[in-house]
Length: 163
Length: 413
Image (cartoon, rainbow over the protein chains, first blue to last red):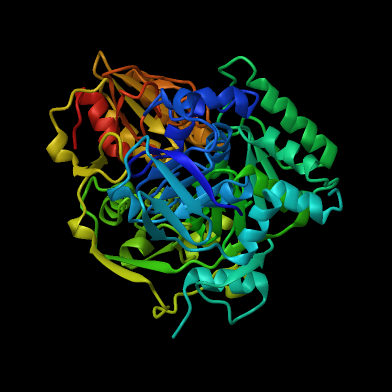
C-alpha cells in the first residue's frame, strides 16, 4: 500500500454509527444515496467539505454502536482514504477491513493535529505531520490479505475463481 | 489455571483444547441471523462473491423486525428481497412479524447454550444470556459465512464480573448493567468478553440475564456471557451437561480484569443524553419533565419487564401530556401479557400498545420525537438522533423507572 497525503477532518470520542449514518437513511437504495447524510446528526456539512483522499482523525471508540456496514461504506464513498483514531469499535473495525477502508490506531496525533491541515500516511510504518513522525502498527496477515484484495467480496471472488 | 467461558465455547467448536485468548481461529457457526435491514445487502453480496448455495439452510434464520410494519416508502423492498432469497435458497426459518430478532433467537431455541451464533446486528450479544457466544458482524461477512460456513475470530480476553448479595426493591438487572457500563465506559470492554458470575446472577431469571448480555456491546464488548444453570437448561430445552454446551465455572480463568460488586450497592440509574456511559442515579434526575416513555426493545420488552411496569401502572393513569408507548418483544410475549391481564392494565392506564418489533428503538417509527423533547426509554442506546432529531433527550432506564416516570410525568425512581 503506497504512501498518501490528505486534508484532515477532526472528530471527537465515541463517534457512533448512528452519527456516521442514521438508521432512517439505511433503507435508501445505494450508498451513493446515503453519502449526503454522512455524519448528519453531528456535522451535516461534512459530506460537502470532504474531498477524495481526505483523512479523518478521531478519538477513542470510533464506530461504536450498530453493525451497520453502511458506516464504513459511507465514509469510503465520501472519498476518505483512512481513519486514524485512538481506538475503534470491533464490528466497525471488521466491516472497514472487509470494505477495503484503511484504519490506523494512533493516540498521539490527536493532541496536535488541526482540521484543514495536511497529513501523510506511510501504511504500516508512520504518520507524518508538520515534519514530525508518529509510529503506527501493521495489521495481522489475514486482515492484510483481505485489504490487499480490496475487501472481502474480492477475496471471496478470488476463492470462487471469479477473479 | 482453568479456562474462561468464551475459551470453553470456542474450544468445543474448533475441537482444540489448547485455544486461548489472543489466538485467531476459524469457527463454524451453529446458527446465523439476518434481519430485514440488511437482508438485501447480504443477498447481493452473496451472489456478487460468486456463491450459489447457502452452506446449511437449517442454520440460517431470517427475521423481519426493524421495519415491521413498513413505515417508509420502499421499506417493503427489503421484505421482497428477503422472501426471494429464502425461496431461492430453501431457507425455512423466516419470521415476518413475530417480534425482535434478539428475543426470538433464544425464545425459539435457535440460540442455545454453548452455541456460536453470528447476526447482522450489534445486539446479537444478547444470547450470551443463555451461555451462547453470539456477536454482531456486517453483511459482507455474513455473505461470506453463508457461502463458506466459517468465520475468523480472535479469541477475546475476558473481564470477569462477580456480583453477590441481594438487590434492593425496585432495582433491576438493567440498573446493574447500566452502572457497569458507566464504570467501564463505552469503550472499556472493546474486543473483550464480559463474563458474569456470583449469587445475584444465579438468582436472576434468564430474561434478566438477556437484558444484561444485550447491553454488553455498549461497553464495546464482543460478547457478554452467563454460565448456564437449571433455569437456562429449562429455557433452552437442553440437558444441563457440558456435552450440550452447558459449561461450568472454573473460577480461575486467566482474566484481563476482575470486578467485584455488592448487589446492595446498586440503585436505580439512568444513562443520560447522549452517551450510554453517562450514568446518574435516578434520584438525581427527579425534576426532569418528560414528554414520552418507551417500554420495549430487545433489552427490556420481555414478559417480566411488562409485568414490572404493569404492577406500577395498575389502577393509575399515565400523566396527561405523556405518551407511554409499549412494544412487546415478541408475539408470544404479547400473548402471555394478554393472558395475564397486563395489556388491559396498560390500556386502562392510557398506554399506546404497538406491535412486537423494534419500534421506536431504531428510530424509524412509532413515536419519533423532535427538538427539546425528553423520553425515558428502556432500550439500549441514547445516541444523538436515535429517536428523532439530534436534540431529543433520551434517558435509558429500567421498566420500573420508566413506568413510575410515565405516571409522574417526570423522571421518578
